[in-house]
Amino acid sequence: RNLVAEWAPGAVWPLSSADWSLNSTASALSGVALSSLTVGAVNSFVLTGLGNVSTSGYTTLRLHVDGGQPAGDNYVQFASSADTSAPPPQLVLNWTKP
Picture 1 (cartoon, rainbow, N blue to C red):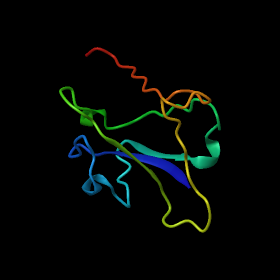
Picture 2: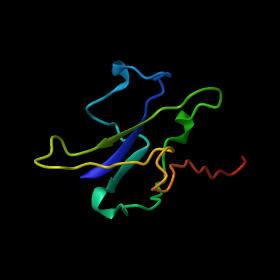
Picture 3: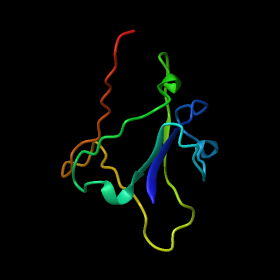
């Protein structure tokens, strides 16, 4: 099982049930093995398709666990900014000026 991500440029805030998807195009993250993620630590991912990031509004990144319906527990949990016992979520952008 892998954590995959896709850009959902049509999604607007607040999100609605139409913004959810069962399958992913993996247009932002092709796959990181769940077993490679470190619990209770910051895990970094290199995203692709950065042209999908809006420079004037919201950008939605939709996360999935691939591989179809699991036989048991297969999940990834992310801490919210309100969780003081875990590293806070963060978005770090590195870019090169054209």
